[in-house]
Amino acid sequence: MPGLSPLELRQQFPIFSHHPGLAYLDNAATLQKPRSVIDGLTAFYERENANIHRGIYNLSAQATQKYEQVRRKVAEWLGAASPHSIVYTSGTTAGINLVAQSFLEPRLQPGDEVLISAMEHHANLIPWQMACKKKGARLCIIPMNRAGELDMARFREMLSGRVKMLAVTHISNTLGTINPVEEMIHLAHQKGIPVLVDGAQSAAHFAIDVQAWDVDFFAFSGHKLFGPTGIGILYGKKAHLKAMEPINYGGDMIRNVTFEETTFAPPPQRFEAGTTHIAGVIGLGYAIDFIRQLDQKAVRAHLKELGRQAREQLREIPGLRFIGEAKESSAIVSFVLDQVHPHDLATFLSAEDIAVRAGHHCTQPVMDFYGIPGSTRASFAIYNTPEEINRLAVQVREVQKFFS
Image 1 (tube, rainbow, N blue to C red):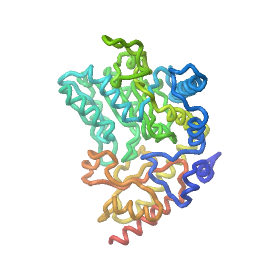
Image 2: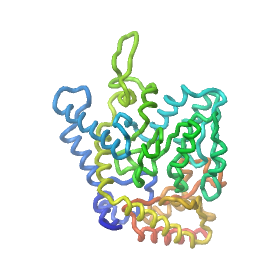
Image 3: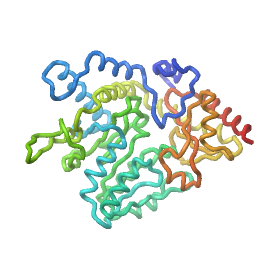
Image 4: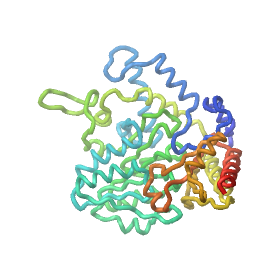
């Protein structure tokens, strides 16, 4: 990768100094944290810790300033028009639930429809499923083919006046498919349908421009952005956020409170009840700084090449079958091995210090579609190397020999 090699990048991630032999190939689950993020979190707790918004003293004022500076940084990074469109959440899941409960449910009527794709993570399925059950609406599924690509012709047919929401993942966490979200947003808006994009797998590696996309909502998690766990972002168009009621109530999200009535603060504060994950917000700011200093074109080229090499080498193993082979795919590779349960394969790989994910990956309907109980998933990041792919392929062959 021009400018900064994966081996040089690894030196910025302390976990690899503690585990020098680790081939960490579970990046779709969470990314490792660079020293700058860890040091930033430590510095906040050691030298700057205070609660925000309510304190008059210097530490509180400084913490509040940093907290709101990150909001502005996120808005700029996403291409949002205003920091008031940026809501701090605990992660992608919380952001999607907020939209489902506060934006969609009040607008949903019996007979209405909500569209999601056949490859969604449970976090972008269950909230819409529950909203539909409460309101007597229908959850409709955009089908996909065996390669793991959405049926766009069928999607166009499904867009109608009955559809009140489209929710779709940018990148499938199981299949690695990159969906044409910009086209889908455009088509949905032609019918007046608002769109939420789940950016959990794409935010760290893809250029996101919420205004250029004209997306209504975009959600992602900090821990999949080299940042801390327990912090996430929901971007929402200002008009939508102004029309939404909070679903969590408490301190710091109010304008005025009496025993008879409460009025709420304007967005985004009205959606951030109580003491939020202040340190997580600070850490997220350092994570964005880390990403910004990378050559993003080189990052995407590196990940694309890792995905290509992984598929090329694994394809040569007899009895191995990929789950999802979309033409447009990311550095996420899922597969099954004949006569070997994914958990057994992952256990054997772990003994060789190779970390992969095994199971249904919170996408049970995807597993049902392929008629399997689960798969083994290898997912790559900027600090992964071709040598680690070689190790993976060699050890999968060894496991195959053992079981055969």
